[in-house]
Image (cartoon, rainbow, N blue to C red; front, side, top):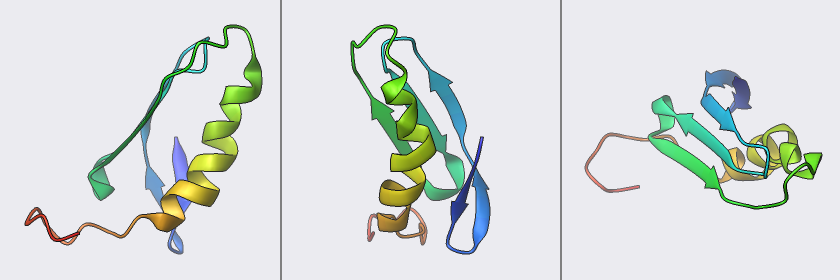
Length: 71
């Protein structure tokens, strides 16, 4: 799945569960977003990938400058 990030598009590997479990792995940012929920059959948690990740989480993430721990 692709997401907008700082005037470009980045790729994430995504896993979505029926109960609102969501996993987004952004290798280029050294970032993993995991959401654990148990609202089975409710599609409201799909908004995490459609709205919350691209509009709230990704804008708050600085691009990795290496693995020195200074982020």
